[in-house]
Image (tube, rainbow, N blue to C red; front, top):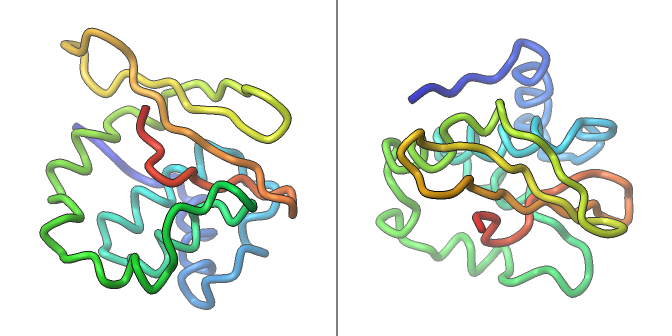
Length: 135
């Protein structure tokens, strides 16, 4: 298992963590956004992780306050996160509709099927993570 942000993604991530402002995500590709989401999970920066979810109307599944109430035990371990998102950076983004798409990737050579990570483009043109993104 491996996971690392590129130097460019690391710069974006650090700026984003400072103020949790999506302006830092403008023109960032969907795979990089997904990697920021994974890094926020690994770093236990749940505020940043929640901010990476879509805010497109009709796609929000729970509030920030509800997210903050989730127990640590429900958030998964580092090993679970690394296993689930292994090789996401080597995946391919496949558009499906006007503002949706998914990253198809092979988390494990032993898996029967490839994994899918759902993304939504918000009204502001920024790619965000769908709630419950794994397909």
